[in-house]
Length: 447
Image (cartoon, rainbow, N blue to C red; front, side, top):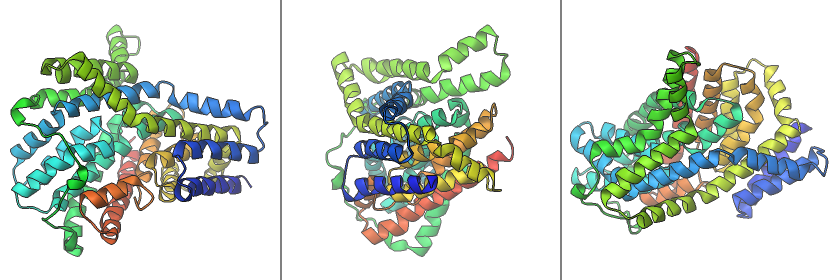
């Protein structure tokens, strides 16, 4: 019966999002109320459960998301992303062009959401492909794969950050293990899949692509953009601070004053704040921008993530209903009675939700609420909890198809037909998700 209630809730959620075209946040809250009633939660307790779920989920995460979005916008508006991409592509040359695209997309992808990163990097890739007389798809696949991996695996992106909070994993562990898992995943879903797809489906590799669908985008003169080093440092500053703090936590004793200071500076909230202040100077004031211009960029970035924040809050509400209604413990106990790995279970649940719901964030948030007790069984082993986060992240990008906005962006930007997008992009995201699961499994053998 509990599983039937969850199934009805998920079907209802899918129906409202896909068929009724209802706002995802509203659909999540409605579903949360209905599922809470079906689970028999006391009527007076349901509103409190919903509020607790939304508030508890957003809490400090709003700081990380907000500051992270502002940082990415400042880097983008100053031309830092343009400088990073063009410099790496120029240094690596034609032979290693895919490696250059991957590195550029990885650095930019740390600071920008998938859709925003796509819009920032694609015009640069388009120009390079035209100059080298290459099909746009040849450079587009490693770019899109890399942006998708950073979006799914690495904080401060919304889904991995929120999932880490739900599963009780250290953001530092998720970041370090996520980077390790990202490397083979990107190689398989990028250059390797690119080679395979070119062999079996060459018609998508066309050179006469028009990306006018991007609309107006800001063109930069290279000499007017920030230097390469400061652009990379600014984009990666949160990652650097959090990674240093995580590494030092293994090296120094907790009571060491130096370590206490490093942990303070490397705490996600403060790391994001310090990185944003650094970006205001390097990408703003140092570029002779006024504070009004800088503030406008920051306000714009918040508008872009406002819907995402609400969706995450709605996912938190649904998660809390599942927890208070005993569903999480019930599902966890079911898997405990089987030999299936918690990592595989987390991936399967998330992948099924992803195919059904379309939104990777909603799928990840819902799945995290269901598998949380499985992650908590690891106790103090934060590394295993981090691998659960990465498993959910890998499952959340599985088989992107017609019910997700990213699918249609790829279709239009690369000039593909519906069939071509399904055979190329949907297949790519499936390969990416499976490769990600394999990478996480491999890491689990050593932690």
